[in-house]
Length: 109
Image (cartoon, rainbow, N blue to C red; front, side, top):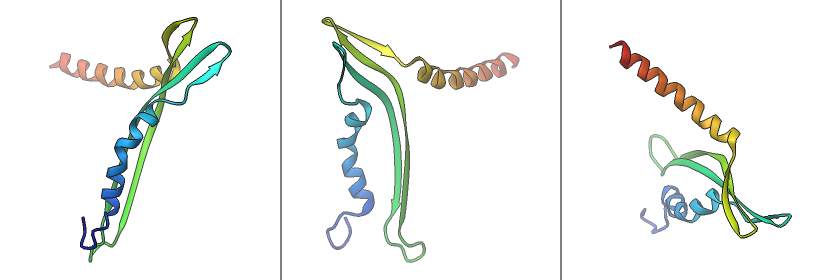
């Protein structure tokens, strides 16, 4: 805390992070016909801020990404996870490319 006992920008943002995690990863339940659908996403975000500084002043910024990976679907008493194939492929293909490149370099040694 700073001298005035008012939380800094960084402290205020950090204090709100636990309240956002679950609400960002899971959407609201939707009814589609007789089925209930709960959307699921991978959520990542980061932030940074500086308090008043003689040399640099005050500033901050942040960013994040949300990837919809699928949904839980409840229908007829059965609960199943339905993946979002396109989003999963969009995440797996670059990862597989990097792993493949590393394996090729290791094999050459």
